[in-house]
Image 1: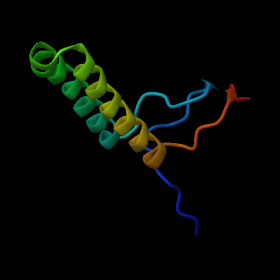
Image 2: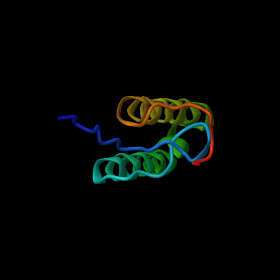
Image 3: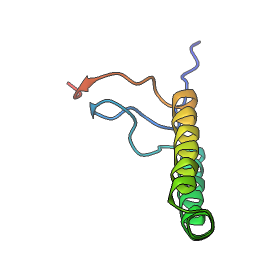
Amino acid sequence: MSVEKKYWFPAKRYGWGWGIPNVWQGWLVLFVFLLLVVAGAVVVLPTQGQLIFNLYLGIICAALIAVCLLKGEPPRWRWGSH
């Protein structure tokens, strides 16, 4: 009996990387990421400036990529489904 692993983020059909989430956990991660971007634009950018905001964005983008690497389909270059 094989257990199929359910990926939160499937690989894109063309190119390298991940597509839109296919389970609720992936959608939650994406929603929280977008919420953090907006919150940073509203709170961090006006009070701390552009440099700190860019560092903040870099950190949350790295966290999103880490989640995609852990919970997404392994990334590789794809030319499409045949």
